[in-house]
Length: 161
View 1 (cartoon, rainbow, N blue to C red):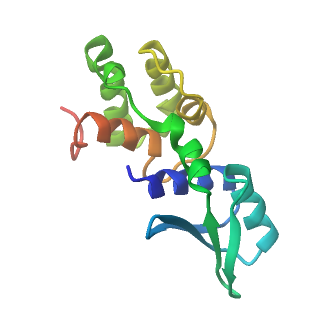
View 2 (tube, rainbow, N blue to C red):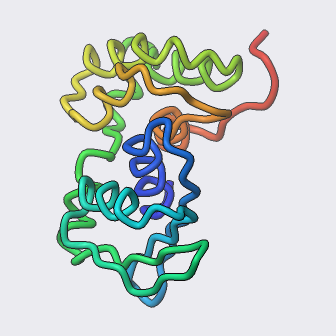
């Protein structure tokens, strides 16, 4: 997953039920978040929860643009999002099998099982484990599942046989 994808997923997770559309871009090494939200204060608070030093660079009636950073803040936000290959190999690839099942069947209610498997494999990343154990709704994907599968192999299409 790209840094932009992870940052966007984390912002959407923080947004919860708020109807906010977010795009994160990397332009010449600088990260920007474009938020389609008519509530400036809500957008600002959301960004500052993840990246406290971000600031607004432009505003229109339908979109707010924030410069994310500085670079060390971006690095801190992404720090706990790396997958150790040893976790993927643990217990005959149990982490990969659980993630693949969640991906194939869209059973995001099984994310706590993925968290347990990651933890038993040696994962101590609060970002990964907390996300999997949260009750946040998921659409068609989950950034942790995508990260695990992207680190181990390409997701298969269709159901397992």
